Image (cartoon, rainbow, N blue to C red):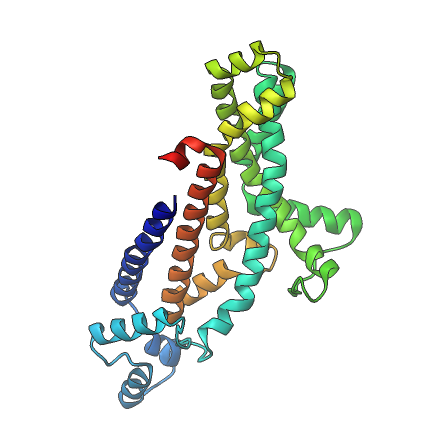
Length: 317
């Protein structure tokens, strides 16, 4: 087990290096120049000398291999430089937005898990009954309705029924718990419902497959309580694919909620990424993509560890 963990950690190095190389090349291939966009984007006149000086200040006059080497060396020391657009350190630009996106992702995944696992298990146990059909309708609606539309409807309901709208300014959890939750609980509910629909169907399918296995019939024939059979034998094995779904959802939520963030006026990682791409902020985009890739690698690693904990056969291999 220890050897497997070491191997997985070592494999993250070429993975992240490959991601860094690809995003560095792509940002240089995409048409557009941050200097021209910043100084002459609104049709203002700017001299060629000013453009050359600004490119030299940003280091864009250096050969590509030198720019890449300097960026990789800084990233290895967790120094991602400064934003080419704002001139502020990237770490400070990302920190507050990452805190918001991370909390929203955690809350959404918790809500999705609390809804999906019980409903998926119940749907599998009551397969073919009216309860099963109601749960399946609930999950299909979650898949069919866009999160941003559900968010808009929720905000309109809060305004029309309760004459209240969520705060527009983010308050960190450590500063004011009530103010923080009053802003993030609503997008977390919307996103959590959307992803609980996927996890509910996955849980139902996995449970139905496990309940047909021989060891479930053996456990029942031994006289074990139905609750013990469901929780210790069926659910534990059925959770393997469900954990994969939750892991991928969590990693995606950190940077993929651009439209939902716009609806609820949240200044998160997704919105920052879009702004950085539009502005051709090379250093910011590179740092954000590398951050998201690191999150995906870490989540996949934790999911694999959860596999080994849930199924001893994987651990022994």
